[in-house]
Amino acid sequence: MPPNERATRLAARVASAEKVAVAAALNLIEDRRAQSRSEIEALLTALGKERAPSFGHRIGLTGPPGVGKSTLTAALAREYRARGLHVGVLAVDPSSLRSGGALLGDRARMSFDPEDDGLFVRSLATAGDTGGLAYAANAGVEVLATAYDRVLVETTGVGQTETDVEHVVDTVCLVIQPGSGDVLQFIKAGIMEIPDVIVVNKGDHGKLAQRAAADLRGALDRLRNAGLGDAGHGTPLPVLVTSARDLVGIDALVDIFEAQRARVSEAELLERRHCGRVAWAVALFARRYGEHGLNTMGGRVALLDEVDRALVSGETPVGVVAGLGERCLARLRSPI
Image 1: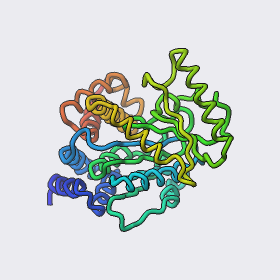
Image 2 (image 1 turned 30 degrees about the vertical axis):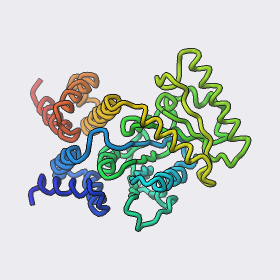
Image 3 (image 1 turned 90 degrees about the vertical axis):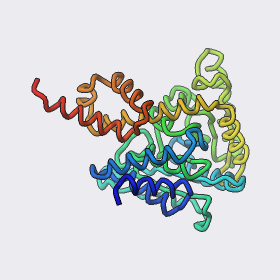
């Protein structure tokens, strides 16, 4: 069977939420061999035709290691299932710098009913990528978003400037824990520029958790009064205390996610997702061809503009990068 026809059939089965097909599609987009790129491109093109452009809601959970992101992700998935929604979960784990392997322990912390056809959980290894996400995370989200109403993306533990998750999801949830440093550590961090909601997890710590939430609200109020903060939202960032262990505040957090999704217009949503695909394509290109390749193509700004135009015309990020790569190599090989 030709690769394009195989990809089209696979996309149709993904849209029907067949678990075997979803797993096969995720296996394909993780394949880094050059001979698989055309089939990946065909799959992404077919997936785009199988769903409405504004379908679903993609939610990212990010924050430092040890704050309970995996437990919180599992609790959110169960709450969404209780509300009758189908959920796909993508959990990203760090890879070893020496062996390249990954424990994939995030999934081990999540216990679900394997017979539940309305829930799918997949782990990805970063394979050396920074920014809290894996190489295939963007394409993985596209796969899950075709099959499920809600997609939860749990990043690996990140620091203050690793903000790639905003390019993959519609809503960013920053998760912190009580006693993890004074509030200045949070408000000065680059990560504070992207969240749509902030969660103080491990609320079972009692007063310590409530104090952390109060400190954050106060700091955000001061920033907003100074004309800063809130990531340009124009409204105060919600700060919520949860306990994923005791299932406290989970329903309220889902309510916040749903309210935020309802407030976003279709045009705003499509623009955010388009910008995410542009950022992904440029990141793919930079990974393969490095700074020298970027400079050869006229620099990052010029490349962003070109990728933007190409994606508007209907190409996929993988296809755009393939075309740009051929031109880049031709320029690099040409005599000066």
